[in-house]
Amino acid sequence: MRAQITLAGMTDIHQVLADHHRYWGDRDLRSLHLPALVQEFGDTCLVARAEDGIHGYVIGFVTPTGTGYVHLIATRDDARGTGLGRSLYAAFAEVAHSHGALRLKAITSLGNAGSIAFHRSLGFDATVVDDYNGPGQAMVVFHRVLPFDWAQR
Image 1 (cartoon, one colour):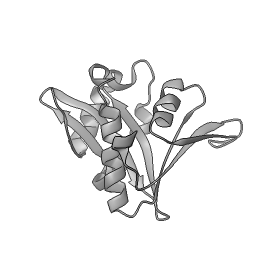
Image 2 (cartoon, helix red, strand yellow):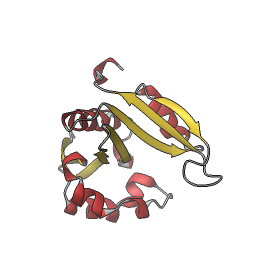
Image 3 (cartoon, one colour):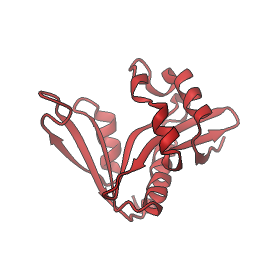
Image 4 (tube, one colour):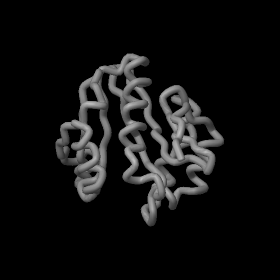
């Protein structure tokens, strides 16, 4: 079943929150799903929609300095391994670039091996930054220059 990537709306974020476990398993990241981000940056937040619901999503925005920041990206448990995450990133890169982004940025925790491998497979540079999220809170920070031909990765 092919999913179509479109702009996200408020009903989408509510559906994602209702189905949170399908995207994040036992990790409770609901507090990071701020409806205000979709409300204010809806032109850079995306969902991959199919007949049976939302298969994946990106919550992101473009900073005034030209960085397309991916706050959250997730695929539903039955859509993993299909290339949807790569497609969502490519769609976000395109929309972010159209809004003036020159680069992409994302962060993850040190222990999130899946996220680190995924971002590296997309050509992101990964750097561990000590105290990024407060004292003793090191994070892995990803960077990728735009534009970029996602099909070549």
